[in-house]
Amino acid sequence: MTESEMIIKLCLALLFGLFIGIDRQLKQKPLGIKTSMVICVASCLVTIVSIESFERFAGPKHPNMDPMRLAAQIVSGIGFLGAGVILRRSNDAISGLTSAAMIWAASGLGISVGAGFYVEAIVAVILLIIAVNFVPYLIKSIGPEKLNKRDVSVKIVMETNDYMTDLIRCIERKRERGKPSEGPMHKIRRLRIKDLEDGRQRIDMVIAAPEKEYTTEIYYFIKKIDHVVSVEIEQL
Image (cartoon, rainbow, N blue to C red):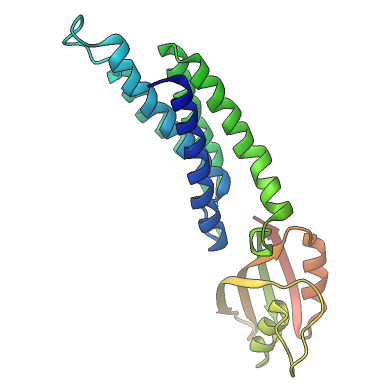
């Protein structure tokens, strides 16, 4: 395998990871664009190093040698370290996936350098930096509006009434009497309703809001809705 073939494979891995990430992000899943690209590039790099190491360090001169045995243990061990940075919050939001993937990718880079695949390691570093910093910005600039959403956790306490459905319609800014509501559109991704002891209701929800909309704007918007007693907002 020539160096140009290895570079093409790494670039294709980045491209395919981008496709998977876009699909996941369009469906508002935790595995986003950056994480998918990092995993694909790192996996491709480790596979290339594994194949080429056997050709370089094993063979007839070393018939009983497995050059990637220790490297495989490194990849598995670093996986536990990466799992330690993945957090699941009380509102079921998951964070740290990209950091965990970068930790795992760093182990692959270390293996590549240790095995002497310097060009491949350099190309992989460049692709990883592009994947984490530049591609998401490009997607947000020219991509569809659905990719420019972020999750916001909202906790609302309402007075005793029968207007919770109207509240949800108002937050999602759905059409009323054939007229679209003004302002950015929101989509409720998760919803939980709980009765409080004083007869009031507490509504916990996660909404997908535009990146350009400030969290404070969402707070003031919900605060002004009728029958809302208190609002608590957290950007995920």
